[in-house]
Length: 229
Image 1 (cartoon, rainbow, N blue to C red):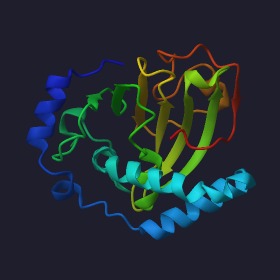
Image 2 (spheres, rainbow, N blue to C red):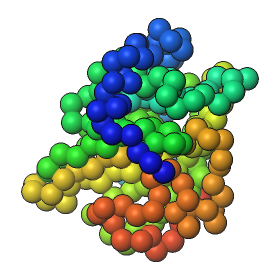
Image 3 (tube, one colour):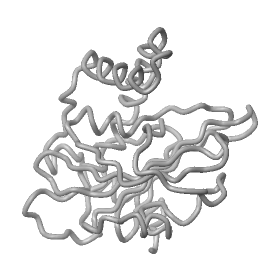
């Protein structure tokens, strides 16, 4: 798929106007308390020993979800409303809201991609949390299992926003193994309506698939896994 240059994307961003003005706003419908309660319950259920510190971890995830808001607003602005025909790429609104510092944005034939890297960082964004806080349902399609923690974590999901058509989103996250190596956060979307099955996932036919810069080929795939943040 041919990727548009960042200059082209910048033009689209400046000419598209505010996403909220073009497609209606995508408000946060989940309170911080409700987010923390759900996050803490899920964390403790997965690991009972985390009970004493899970909420603190979830507070970080909430801050990262808030920081990811501009990315998620751009994603939802690009998604199709129920009953809407496919939209020519040149008319796809990206967002009038400035992206967070260091986040590179590009468009391709299927969707939108975000790429962020920072030396020594454990992370800064939580797109899955930001989507859920806006009422988007996320269904896991599969998770590649890499042989080492330093290679990061990845999850492919079917996202269903209220009143809009489902789309596929992949999130890849890698905390920096050392202070000199980069932390990485990548988000890829596909609005074509094609939902990859496990065979397609294993063959790399999914948004962002085909190899990660800091990871070897996965050793296997799991149907479900924790969010990569």
